[in-house]
Length: 339
Ligand SMILES: [Zn+2]
Image (tube, rainbow, N blue to C red; front, side, top):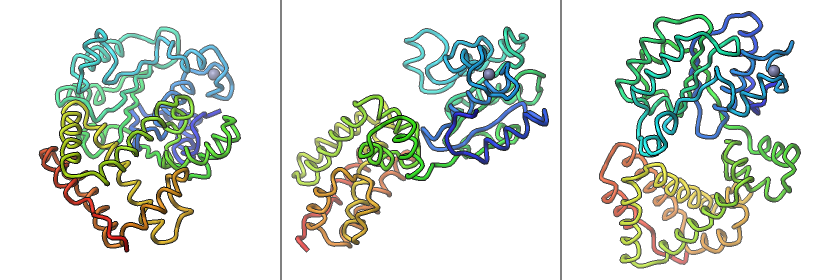
């Protein structure tokens, strides 16, 4: 039983290769964050080492060990793995030392299973040296060793690495599918299931994390409060906010991108409300607030600001000066027109 939800194309392809014993020695799973890449990779590792007649059974000793991260032949290599914990925390890329260690381990026979499986989580974070080192391993496949690379963006991986892997695309699920899983399989009450299903944009993993850990929804609420303060605030407040975000950006680009994504989501909701498409909004729990706020802007203002947020995101991805980009964004927040 494959645990990953949806992704029928990728699953049936893997199932077929298992049945025909035509396993690739390297797979590349590509998809947005939390869409199910790690779940699918672990499922594949289970299928390769399962002791039951219909792998992956999820129940045998091997499947259970893999699910608990305790199988000696299944290893995850990522930003936070390997070395001591201080080293792991301060790492900003997957280094050559981690790949070399993996190579050494891959040269030894499986300890308890049939296959050694190495999952490289965030493969796009490999340094150039690490990627080149991995390439050598991929060029000389060894029987019984499978590499599974996970990435949100295969466009920034070296083409030589990509061409050595079988690529499987994972796609966001339909909102209704996520809602059904949360409600029917996980027993989450329907109102919360619907909200989480919309907020996760088809990436079930995020919804499951948010259901298990209230701090994610708490953080969203704080960010929306801040957005409203800043939108109604004066220039001084806005530039203070920019200083705060720019400082965060130097430590974590991801955090600032998350804030911009939330802004984009909010202003898209305002646009939808303005167009009378309230059913399609993401922030369903705050519909009344959105309706009230949408009354203060005209359509052209909302559209223009959505473009500004998208442009800011794009410029940050292209390494523009974060402070400058965010200041320009703050200056383009529309004033209430009352139209
Ligand atoms: Zn099993």
